[in-house]
Length: 307
Image (cartoon, rainbow, N blue to C red; front, side, top):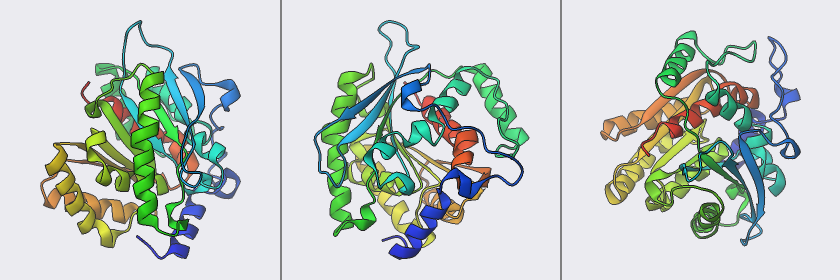
């Protein structure tokens, strides 16, 4: 395990606690994204029940863009959620949409220029200007997004075996069903994997087990530990050597309790000459940060990949 189990769970639970416990002292947090009964205009939201191990997952949401031209295809992005929603498969499957601002971030990217929506500065002025310049030069093109329930593998009797089973479920159930239902490219090069906090940890473990499935891995404030950074970098080096070049994205913030660990992983990747992107924003590890900036940065990275 990356951290002793109890400190790890306590840290993740505090980091992604309900909004009332993490209110912005500078002012109210922005509203939650729309509930599934009021789907974001950009998406057709499908709540899919699928075969699987009850402990690992039987449910995911699939967000299919409505704005595509006839015959147009887009990349597929698989997003894993954090610890706070692991206790309920429905909460987990809808976490990115209802709690992490996926719908509003997608719409903001489609309708630039971006402006702050919260009084807390989770963007620097320079980064906000940079993103707007990038969107002016190349508009946001869009993605289909699969959001599977993510289990708390640290509660499993054998966490490594649970990660093996979860990787197998994504490969054999989630990816084929998403490709059957959405107008997406069906190759690994245009399929990405990302995750937030605990989902970042699960995501990197899945990617290292099955790098041939994904052209990119990203982590948003990934719940990893600094002392494991060299081992992760070695494993990523072996994965890239076996599967070919992959796009790697580490997104964190200055107030993220996992900032130092993500920075250490980036440094170890650089030491091994493995291409990657490390982006550090202002702000803490909470859901308002995701809704304001983190989810948007994550989407922008995957949208900018070659297609």
